[in-house]
Structure formats: structure tokens, C-alpha cells
Image (cartoon, rainbow, N blue to C red; front, side, top):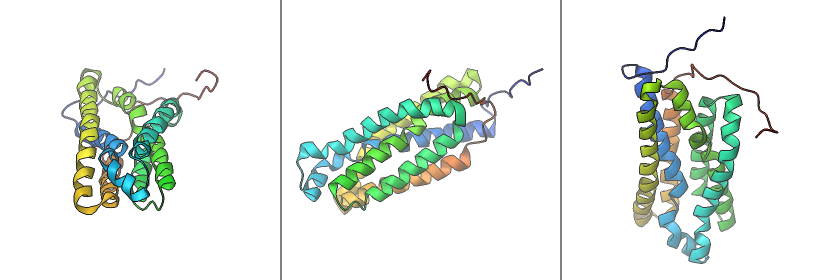
Amino acid sequence: MPVAPPPGWAPGDPAYRRITVALFLAGLATFALVYCTQPLLPLLADAFDITPAAATLSVSITTLSMGVALLVFGPLSDSVGRLGLMRITLLVAALIAVASAFSPSWWILLALRGALGFAVAGLPAVATAYLREEIDPAWATPVTGLYIGGTAIGGMSGRLITGWLAQGFGWQIALGGIGVMSLVIAVGLGVLLPPARRFTPTPLRHGGH
């Protein structure tokens, strides 16, 4: 007889609170990283002697590579698991963001932004599936809504924080500051999320995908 999976986490369980806080903050960090260069476009244009139109590539290449990576990480998570994928990709994205503050050239910065977009996709690709699996079905929808709210706040706060930091300290400190903030959240994600209890791996089917 197959063993029934344990029930999903519900309010009152310490793990439920840890998951909601961790995924809210992770969603915030994800989209703060994606859009943090948007208020820096004039500064990047001046720093690297490029046109304002070219500076917008720092945003578009990130969103483009993120879109491609979403097609990869979703199916991959069905085989390797959601939890480790979210932890690793957010950590890598945060480290890339810190490294981008030291970019010596425009093309290196663009390459790092492209790599960041690919890495940061790991969390939005699987976060909803993770919540649907680990949270009690009666509470999965509000928790998912809270996570989505975190992504919206992240997109806004990423712009505000980098704009404020850049005004006082320059674009390097602005990018580094968002990277450090996201690094702290990535570490917190690894600490707060409990082990997955209801995930069942499935083999990768490349032809089907």
C-alpha cells in the first residue's frame, strides 16, 4: 500500500509562518534584482559612454534571459526538487548582483545582467508549485497571493532603493547594495524553509518538454 503524504502546512504550524515570510522576501529580492538598473540608466550611460537607449539593455537582457530560464527551471524542478533549486538560484543571482557592481566595462556588465536574469528565474519558476505542494490546500491561495505581492513590492522597491543609493553614493554602491540585501534574503531562505514533505520527483522527459 502506498504511504499517504503528510498534510500540508497550515496556520498554527511554525513551518507555515516560516514559509510565508521566506517566500515573500524571496519574491521581493527576485524582482528587485531584475529591475534595479532601471533608475540607473542615465548614470550607466555616462559611466560607460553609451547612449541612453543602449543603457536600457541592462534591463531587457535580464528579462529576456529570465524568460528563457523559466522554460528550463520549471520542468527541471519536477525532477530535482523545488527547494534546492530556489535556494541555489537566488543565492547565485545575489552573488552575480554583487559582482556586477565591480564591472570594468559595459559588455561585462551586460553579460553579468544576462547571467543574473537566468539565475534569478529559478525562484519564480517553481515558487507557486512549491507552495501548492507544501501548504494546506485551504491556505495555498492566500500564501501564493502574499508571495506575488512580494514580487510586486520588489519591483518597486528595487527601483527606489537603487535610485536613492545612486543619488548619494553612485551606481556601483547602488547595485552592490541590492546584491547584499538579496544575499541576506537568500541565506534567510535557506534557513527558514523547512524540508519538502510532499514533493514526488518525476523523470525528465526531454522529448515531451
